[in-house]
Length: 374
Image 1 (cartoon, one colour):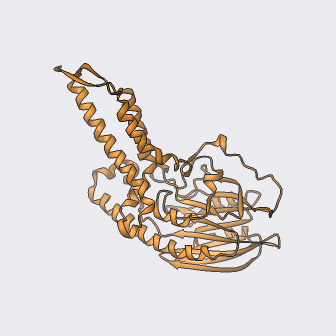
Image 2: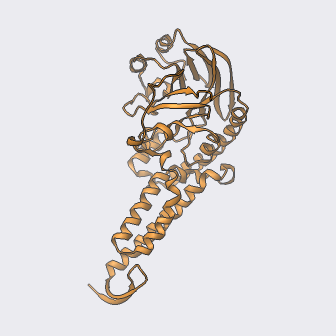
Image 3: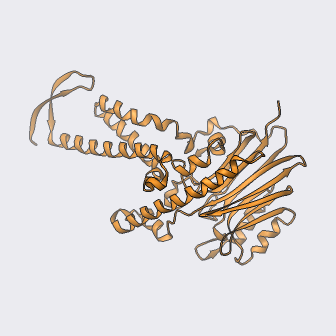
């Protein structure tokens, strides 16, 4: 193979003569192209939460893939180190620094996440679950849901999204909560948002724009009122066919479908942002400790998440374990379901049931308690 003499830095500023092959030059060019592309995309992902979708909705799709972009840039940095290009590796490391403050939104090490649900005080348990109409495809899963939800102990409060009233056997689900108080809001057609509470619901209401939110004021133990917000924000509009293309990797070969997906994600992100702005106005004047849960249809690297989580705590960030995905399709990379809570509550435990395959979403459960007054 042809060789030629070249002189280049040793990564510390010095120079030394070396033999560089054509293959080496090609590898350098390819690595530089990958590194620059991934780094620019990651920087855009960092900016996504701060840019309204009404200004540049297409940024949303970059935020969706933030974890993959971050891992790609980490790999690029390691490759540059192996190649002895320490200055380039250091420059890449600078791009990674802002992401260090976002890692806990996606991944938490179990060693540092200890549950303290056994402590005293008036606590309550909450389950949030997008049940996808109690079916997967055309197959009804009511029997399986009954078995799953019948497990003891039953949560004190249950927030369902996509609760399909017309599904066969829905009365069996209802009967599980026969002694509970409930509040129901129409999402569209027969799909409902439903909140069941072991404790009395003294007030409730709904917010319906391009998305659906309901709130219930629940009196815990006859003295502590907590407002529970049950949310199903506007869909990302990724169809089952889209998911199959994405899962199979065929989407890269179908430019028209990819463009269609990007356009839909951008448009619907803007609709979600408008709904969240409305919800925030209600949250900001809520007189009680509050929890916001449900299917937000957006990732932690999004304008929607940044807006809705302002001045709130994220139960997964505080008590979660492992990688926090909540949506099983698309290779299980998306975290789009949340439990957020106000400062006057404490989260004692949080779990995502990754073994559950009854819906395309995973159920979230947590234990909360009001903070003791000083």
